[in-house]
Image (cartoon, rainbow, N blue to C red; front, side):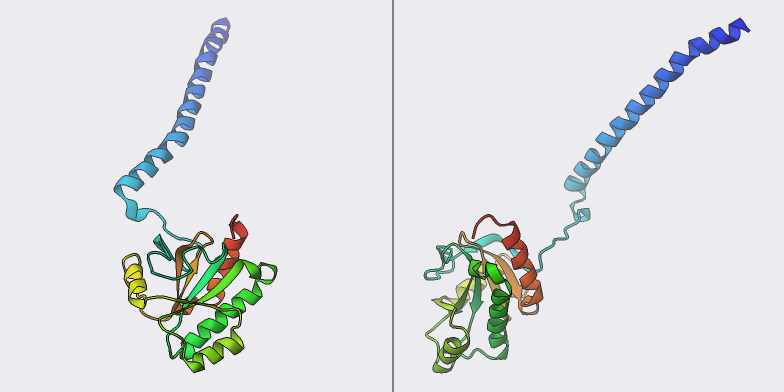
Length: 205
């Protein structure tokens, strides 16, 4: 009887130490194993890394600047606000007019933040009488800047892996960096979502 008690007393500390070691090993594994997995995934299996983003537009990396695009009076950040750059051709057909309309509605829909957004039409030549009439009657807040379409297209195609030849709109930050591209099907609710998010988290503009 006494021997049995002595054996239990002697094995108690050993069992306790063994459990403590197991706990330490488990904690070590929990801390270290994910690090090794992340390291291996980053360097050996980068295709497995999730690349989902919350933005609707396409990020332009690296960003463009007004100087690169030979834009007049836009490379200074258009007054330190966020700027919607809208390429407009001389005829400005239905899709062009729809872009202008949607950009205006997005700005109006921002309410108290509307003054943090400027709209700029990019033209390759002086506007026609019809286009000037449209701008004067429906888009009085729209600024006009001259640009070279081929220079812009070359810059976009060197940075983006999507078709940039259709109708689109660009977003420039208050520092003059043109950093997002919106194809025609993203001009509307998706664009409004991105702008609201940027205005919410931005400390500039």
